[in-house]
Image (cartoon, rainbow, N blue to C red; front, side):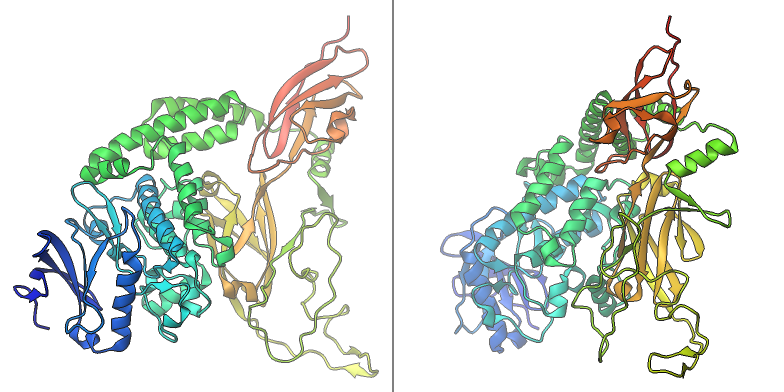
Length: 617
């Protein structure tokens, strides 16, 4: 198309072309009346004749002109619907787009990612208050002002005004596939939370250097977004910690009801994350980064490690050693040569190893340990853990086959089992079989029922995401049993395949546990969350006098633990919340011995407890 550079549009001198997109060409211009530099966005000629394109440009001008925010590109003027050339005039920004910055200069840093997305979230607070959903948030639509690093969200051209739903282009997919929310793809209603999903994608990309949803073509990308399948950020960039992962996961929730419910909430989450590591979420902070990214990274890394060390020391003083180890791991991810962190980590690890020493005892003691762990000795001599099996519920919107659906009667779950959806059938029978096998047997109407013909097993592909498992633990390798086969994973995500419609998945580890029945229907919807929890602490008492009784005076759950209980049959102690250590204080009492009180740090699984009691004088 012929350029407009060197011409005049009304009161604007068009000086040079500075960018173009699928909808318009952007020129640097000059306002001849107010004597200021401006950007002139001119609709392509082949679109200017289309009513819908003109209406989109008009919507952008009217909607954004009402917004006033430092992080939203300001609109000065609009040509009007009847003009020969359809254009809008905005402030001119000297600097690159965020897309150009990502391609040419950016080195992924979670802190910088949080700073950038925090500013954009604040811009959306203003837009959403005005009833405007942007619908096309992507790096190309963010400008970086070179002199002070101020971010400008622009191009509201396909924005949806919430109180004027009729302006939506029904039946058309508008926007950039890689940054689309699921509801933009499947045609469900849109609201402010649609923009928050796109911000979540941008946060993931800035934190890791990669997009969460990738594919060989747009169709594959859209399918992955609809499935909600993406790699954990920490698996892509080790600097991504669990706190930022949690923010990203909430922003990228497939169901809008499970996301942040407002831009204010997302901004508040990012503010808290930044302030935890002594980074102030301000325009000055982000301006400092864009002026000299390399110097900023060095300074920010130093501030972050100092803040994390202080929190690790505080956690150690409070006896929260698992939390301290996690914080020290983050320090070493940023600064691998931090001697203070390595020294503190070594001390904590030594203490952990001492607590994990295994007593090599006789068969009787081993049996006691198994019983204390909640295991069952089967008649054939094998041992299985008594663990509740969770069944993944299938949401109502999952397509169902036509015709009547016959529900199987649920089987009896173990006492205390947590069950979601329908209970899985016994693992030793096919889902639709009756006791007695597939041989001919009487039917309910009399006579015999023919044997079920042999069917070819269908392979089911599925992605698991392990929740509640520390990244450092996963990296050391966790054994996962899928049906009768075992595999090892070193990541928080794991692709699996199995024959048939469902399989039981179990974590096989001395310290961690999980069990879930995975069904094909759920796999088709996206990644299956597997909630991993620490095994209860089993107390194995060593060298105590006969008939010693024990009472927990501090750190144990309320109830029976505060009573005097026989040491030989002391109950396992569960872990509450997210912690994987529990500080307790026990009192020991036995006939003919001095009463003794001592503190212990419990870890998941077996814990050897030594308490040297002295004979009474």
